[in-house]
Image 1 (cartoon, helix red, strand yellow):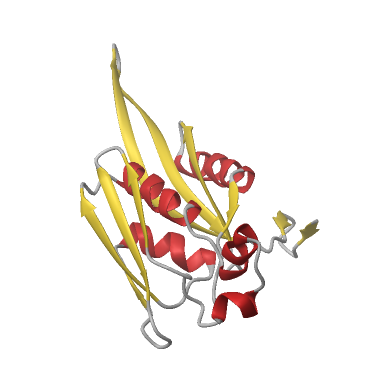
Image 2: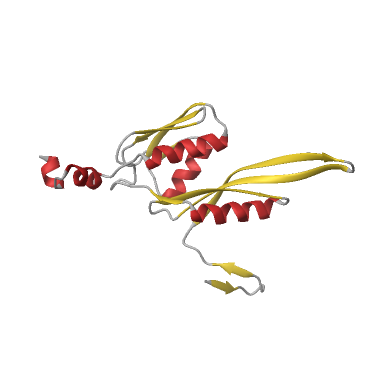
Length: 172
């Protein structure tokens, strides 16, 4: 799926959009000075309900971002979306000391969220949602808490199927 552009570089055509959430610089002190390494958290998604996150570490920032993007594409999950491009029900995710609350919102609300949670929800395709990042705000833990909440979501049809009923029976 690689095409050549007129500059001669290889460009990858992909249906996924990626966002860099956080870049951390780490320094190791050696005899000649400091040696830096970088860690990047990247989230990828298709804006249709698929989203994944990855962590990449390297000596240079672009290489760390590339590694994180590759890992994120391996860790994709499916997020159930309702007709208003929101989530079907409220969910709370926990990871470490972080806690994230996701609440569905009516059409036209937009994404009310912190920068980390916003990046995840935008690439997932959610357009209307209210969120609150509770307790700690370490980007690593907030990302994993958000994914914990997204993994806890179930669509209306999944709930009906688990109960052995049709959607019409559920609606009464």
